Image (cartoon, rainbow, N blue to C red):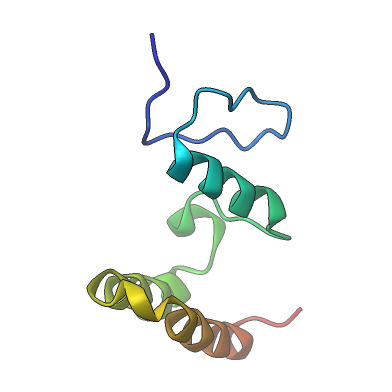
Amino acid sequence: MGVDPSNLAVNEKADTSSYNALQKKSARLIASARHISQFADRDSDPGFVATVLLPGLTQWLGHPDDGAGTLKRIESQRARSFTV
């Protein structure tokens, strides 16, 4: 049985040798994250997810070439929603 391309292992010791290029890039991105939310509706504030994160992801899907701008807008709103 092959690797399901819609799933990524988050354990740094997981075997990623059969991953395709996008999966490998995604795994590197996840490994470099300081924090990760596996399930936004469970692991984050529902109000933030509904009013900031989901609209931001929808916007990015419509304009994937503006990922940096989308992240900047989400981060700006995240900074106002959460205190570290």
